[in-house]
Length: 377
Image (cartoon, rainbow, N blue to C red; front, top):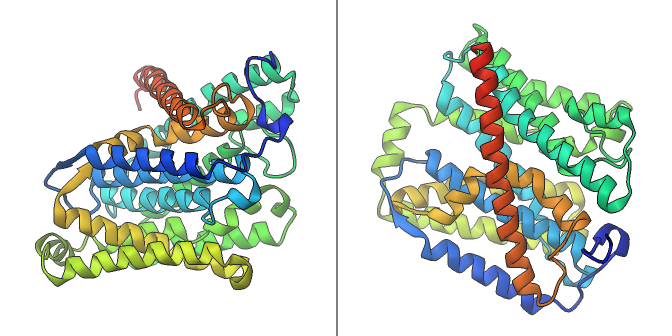
C-alpha cells in the first residue's frame, strides 16, 4: 500500500522550499472567507459569530499543524496555530454554555447529551483509524490501549496513540463535569465563578505535582481559558452591558476594537517570532491574553459591522469533526497532501477533509438521535 500514499510519519518528509505555495494557499482561503461575507443582524458573540471564530480556529489548527509537522524548520510559521485554536475552542465553549444555560437553568440531561456529542464521533474515528493503521501501516495497537481510548482516556506522550488530537475530549469533558455540578448547585453566582477557577487550578496542580504529568501535561497550558470563558459569559449576561454592546456600534468604540484586534495579532506574531528571548511560559500567557482579546474585540467589530463569513460559519459547524479527522490524514494517511503541485494537493486535502467531516457529523447525529430516542433523555 505504500505506493498509493505518502506516509509522513515514516518518511519524515520536510517541505523546505514551499513558502510561495503556502502563501498562495493562505491567500486563496482568505479570499474564500472574504467573498462569502454577507450582512446579518449580529448580536455580540452570538451563535453565528461563535461559529465564525470556530471556523477561524480550525484554519489556525490546520495551518499550524502543517507548519509544525510537515515543513522544514526554517520554513515554519512562528505562530503555534494549534495552541491558539484550542484557546479559542475552550473560551467559546465556556462562554457558550453560560449563554445557553444561564445561571441556574441547567438540566439533568446536560451530561448525557455532552457525552454523546463527544463520544459518538470519537468512537467512529477511532474505529476508522485503528483499521487504517492496520491496513495501511501494519500497525496494531494493544487492546488495552484501544479500550482506554474508547473510554476517553488518552495518555499523552507515553504511548503511540491512535489519534493524538483526541486528548481534547478528555479535557473538555472534565470541564463540562465541573461546570455541571457547580451550576447545578445552589451556590451564589460569584462563588460559582471562583470555584470554576479553583477547580481548574487544583486540577493543574494535581497533574503538575504527580506522575499524571507524564500523561496529561498538555492540559496545563489551558488551565484558565475555559473558566475565563465562563466568567466572560456571566458578566456579558448583564442587561446593561448587553445594551451597551449592542447600542454602541459606531464611532470611536469601533476604532478602539479594531486597534485591539490588530494589537492582539501583533502580540501573537511577535511573541512567536521572539519566543526564545521571551521564554516559553511568558509567551504562552501573552498569547492566551492576546487571542482572547482578539476574539472579544473581533466579536464586537463583527457586531458593529453586521457581517459574517459563510465559509467560516460552515467550517465552524463541523469544527469538532475536522479536529478529530485532520491530523491522521495529514501525517499518517496523506494520500494527496504531499503531491505536486502543493497548492492543488493542499486544497484537495481540505476538500476531502471537509467532506469526511460532514459525513462524520451526519452519521454521528443519526446514532446519537437513535440513542436519545431509545433512552428518552
